[in-house]
Amino acid sequence: MSLHRLSHCFALAVALCLPLVPALAQQAGANPMQGLKTTKPLEARLWSSDSRDRDVALIGIGKDKLAYANRDKPAVVQGVIALDSVQRAQFELEIDYAELAKAEGRRDWVGVYRVLNAALAPAMPYLTLPDNNAADRVMQMAGAMMRIAARGEREGISDEDRERVAKQYEAAYGVFKQLAEVNWSPIGTLSVIKGSQCLLKIGKPKTAQYYLDEMPEPMPGDVSYGSYWLTQGQLAILRGEIRKALEYSILSVAFEDKDIESFPDALMLSANCYEQQEEWYRARDIYFEVASLFPNTDWADDAAGRLDTILKSGKTVDAEESVIENVFFAVNEDINDLGRKLLEERARAQSTSTEEPGRRRPPVE
Image (tube, rainbow, N blue to C red; front, side, top):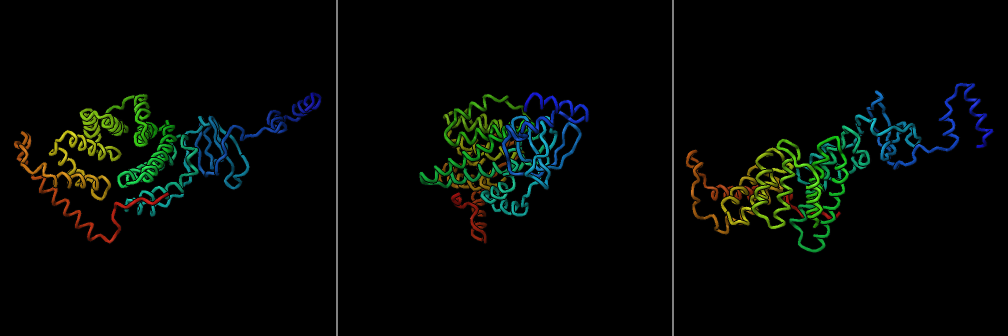
């Protein structure tokens, strides 16, 4: 545009009280999507600091701003707002909750993943928007991805199986890495820890330890406390530090006995430590408790398998010396007998079940 033409536009704008800057920007061909990553339209309601609620289709996001469109015309940019002005986001998520519940009930983690991934994929670029309704579900999906990998790890026998499991853990790590950017919720910190667990599984314990060391040590009562000490214990046992691993697992169990994200795994870790120290009675007791407390879970399956192995080995056949607490409270249960009854009940339940066994070989994705 020539200087003469620019002066004419300015004079005309002043005379007519027109907004000069937008007009010039439009003539200069300014692109509102510049610097933004275009996404599949995601219908959402946004609450922002300008006290305006917006029912929009989110169509692009960058480092410090996002673009939105009218829901009826998602191909046309309606506006751009700063990310730090967004106070809350509610996404339209089409989750098949009935199918999700069925998959969870069957321990079909591949099914859980498929249901959630189909609904959550459009929301993945927008997880950092404050107080959104997708982050919790994405955390659930990442947990299912870890369970798929863990089951494959237990049942895999070939190099191909192990390679597939490594890729599954890598995929779960990628999701946790995205969730780690969620700084408006404890999900972010917990995802750093879960990501470290995935790194441990794909043979990167030093990197896993690095991320744990970089974060502040959680305090008792923090959502991440149980998972933090569980992961520290997993890293310690990998280094052969059995006593330290046991210490960390006990910290996790003692302070977070209601955290399903860590409690069963921490119990299993402590039992593993007792086994490695040949404290067979302690290991037996914990495996029995896990199999009893968490029926119809992978934890129960694993614990029952180890309990069966210990009982058949004869390592707990002799009566254990009663500790002073048991004498005082008149507790004298025969865990060997209780354990055998538990295993018999599980065997009967599996033989009479009309469903497929809970422990199936995962399908190839």
